Image: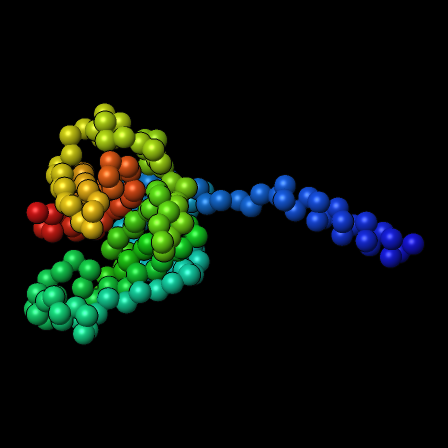
Length: 197
């Protein structure tokens, strides 16, 4: 009798397994008091110590360290490399959250990039701005909510047309990135104004 109950319970679990849903992360990008994002009631922001972030948010699936190496030396002298925005940074790739957090040399959060569309290395992020911009938003909708961008850049790269628009918040930047007209990323970037050409 005990074995029959056990088999019955296992069969119920296997029948219900496809119906179970696992909670997805819900992130909200904020612009006040400082650029950052929330997950539930927890706030993460630019300039925050990465150690505090990792304790609260959790570990990433992948870590990438940017250094002056054989690859970068093909494109830059050491002096040129050191002037690059992401020189000597460490990135935490949250593959399943569609999120990349980058720390600066001082161990503080430098960039937060949400991928709205999945790619070869990251799944998509379930994120929205506090004002409601999320996957599928058009350039028109973003400009309607945030106004005329501080800067707009367009590039043709590997057969794709990339466009980024930037909004300034003191020395920090909120950026929306489009690939072939489709919103691909929402980024918040610390002290980025000197790098926008």
